Length: 109
Length: 114
Image (cartoon, rainbow over all chains, first blue to last red; front, side):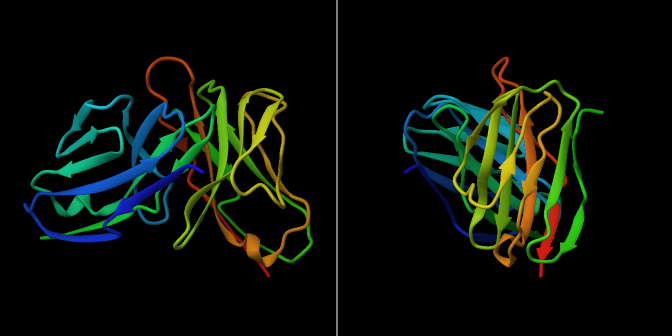
């Protein structure tokens, strides 16, 4: 059974305090690993797709990396507007996606 | 504007009363999917569709039906809703073309079954 585990469940940072979110996955036939951001009461918003181990992608203060067993979302010098729940999802066998439970990030000014 | 539109946004219904949640996308996406999101359980896939007339079960299909008669629409049907189907539902779509398979999600439908 495909599994995706995110840690920590919640993370509180001071503005400017860099950190990383972890996504561990056990998926047969991984075709892609996605990161999303979700604000309260809204649908998830796509951030990145990673396809192979060693791949990295960046967007503003966020950088996503991928190994054969896990992915990291690095947040550099976060701002309060980065506060949200960050979800990762593994795309496995044809059409089937498995989401993690998310990490809720709070950035205090 | 490229988007996935779900209706209604909020719905309160009674046990056993059939309901349909509509989902429409204007991006010509081939792939569409339904998820439910519950506290502590994350997003769980209900059904997905790789193309018109092609649907398949996700992780939690019991009590739900879907159809894909047109490319743009993917309605979710609850024939006899029960209280354990109270949840936040999301429809999502993506293109299978190119290198980016990220989903575009709708704004969600909050369903309460009493």
